[in-house]
Amino acid sequence: MPSRKTKTPHSSPPAKPPPKTWTALSVSEQFRTLFGLKKLLVATHREPVIYPDGTREASPLNQPKLKYPAGGVSQSLHRLLLQTGGDWVSLKSSPGPRKLSISLPGFPASYNLYRLGLKNTLESEGYQRFANDLLWPLFHEEPGRIGSQKEDFKNYESVNKKFSEKIAQVMIAQDNGVLWVHDYQLALVAKFLRSFGKASLPPMAFFWHIPWPSPNYLSYLPERRDLLLGLLDYDLLGFQTGLYRERFLESIRQEFSGNDEIEVSDQVIKKGTRTIHVGDYPIGVDPGRFETLSLDSIGLSQAKMFLAENGLAPEEMYLISVDRMDYTKGFLKRLQILDALFQQFPGWIGKITLLQIAPPTRSTHPTYQTYQKKVREEVINTNNRWKKRRWAPIISIERTVEHKILAPLYRLAAGALVTSTNDGMNLVAKEYLAAQKDEGGTLFLSRYTGAAQGLKEAVLIDPYNPSESAAIISRTLLEPPSIRRGRNRILREQISRNNIFQWMGSILAGIHDHTRRKE
Ligand code: ADQ
Image 1 (cartoon, protein in one colour):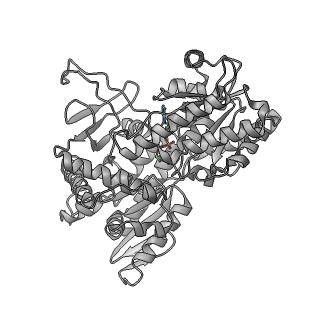
Image 2 (image 1 turned 90 degrees about the horizontal axis):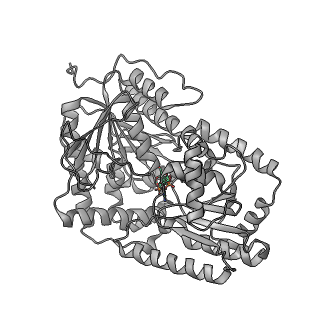
Image 3 (image 1 turned 120 degrees about the horizontal axis):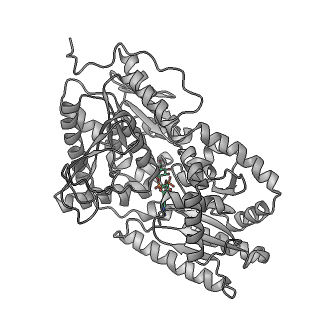
């Protein structure tokens, strides 16, 4: 007879029919219905807070003011845990203590953040290299950018193991009802947790945020079987789209074709006595939050000030692009599209500007240094090629911009230019739509994003075909407003329905169903 502590929620009812529109509150209510008093445990590579530099250690009388990074996912999970309470394990990347209790005024609960410090620099560098110099380019189908070294997998394993040890400690103390691990940096956490031989583990869900490539790309990865088997140690595997899920299943079929222990069907993999649910759960944004921010009068005047400071007059037409300066976001392709636009349709010269908000990312990596240098050079070249009196076609801002200013910047833009050459989903596309209450702006969306697989009404462009993309952009910008509005209405309806809370709610319901089926 299992102890009360280790029992899975036998008596919990099935999930209620899903609400029409999910909210943070409905997910947290659903969580309570499904998991009772048990707590959610989240694990991510990156932490959801930034502890301020130079602050003395916290004490009850000296609570430092935490900052929050701009990322869409971490901030949504953060808000969910502030509704439900829970625990979170991630790497420590700013000063401050190893454990923080996170609370915010206006939210009913708080959660514990356990911050894992890596003392061994070589190990930490190897882990990051395996994740960012091998898995990242490979899974974005860019094998030419692979820069990892042979021993890096050992370090990747070792850091995943440390995560698992910390998670196991937290589970003992907190009696968590479900573990939810995120992304390609932490694929092996479940494998190590199982290897510790604990009699009972909570159901373990995993979400893969980046694309799953065509199976032939996996052959570049010597450790592909370890990675795939590691993933099969989770109970639920979530992918952004049906295409990525199918490719994952195909990878398993190809890699383990002669293995009688592994049986693959559409949504389920059987491995010995275990069943692994494999689903597609397209991630969304919190559209209400972006819409409200985009309409806020203070934010709007700050955004107008921001435009003026950067040389854009209020009546000037601009396209916006917002992404980390990563090669997968297609910065060079974007500049080629702009070139083609001015070449093919000279009427746009002096009439439209690209506002590119692009904080550098992974800047210590040589691949990124070279890429970012090239982007900067090409921005200068494009500006020199097309500038006219005081006007230049690109304003490039290399820093993060708070969402309260970003949302009105989205709203004021004539369009958003998303040019990724491969992207798991792309939240910026959905944030842009959420900010179009006036329904006036156009999303120009790369066909190589997960978002394009769901947002069928969007104006799709092909970053590998600059001249066709330029023609589409020119034509669409000249369309009557009624056409743009009609299109946006459908797209906005879609992102409202498939919002971030729906994503969370369906994954939590999926992992709960898994537990029920096991009983
Ligand atoms: P990312 O590659 O980081 O995410 P994306 O989905 O576009 O890409 O999300 C970026 C987030 O960071 C957005 O919320 C955006 O607002 C914010 N952001 C980016 N640049 C910013 C800036 N300059 N200032 C402020 N905020 C900025 C990974 C995958 C994606 C997948 C997400 C979520 O690569 O494919 O969509 O995870 O699963």
